[in-house]
Image 1 (cartoon, one colour):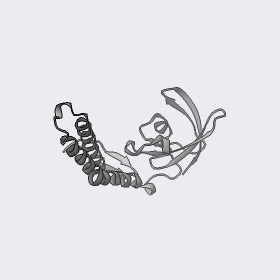
Image 2: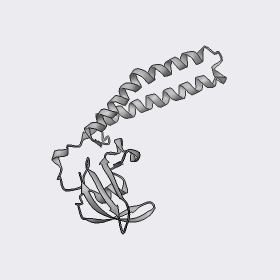
Image 3: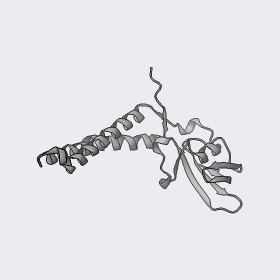
Image 4: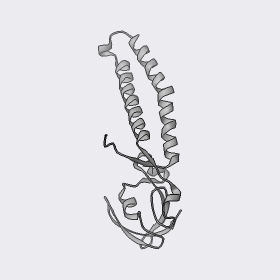
Length: 158
């Protein structure tokens, strides 16, 4: 039995990965194979930058397919109704303010596989999430970040 990493994710995150996998296998893979065929037709492969570029892209696509397949195979779906509703946990959106007078910030805590800070989704392995998990509305928390200490107060959990 292997000790592969378990990837915590929401059902939405898993579905998004499955869509990406399908696109890579059915569209991207074929595009790259076609690019390789065209590049081969240019002749000498030893100095053929189009061929080298297409082969590099093929390696990337195949690597990404393998990674996604592993993530899906080892996915553990976060069940929203199995966690305490008034506590910060995976799958929950937490809103907090930085003390003493910072702006409100909201993040959804997700597994590392679907983290996307630009979409407001942070990994449960991030310093902010680690500090907030298990806390409740009204709690004041000191968050250790690479930029230094941050004091926050949890405003809401959804």
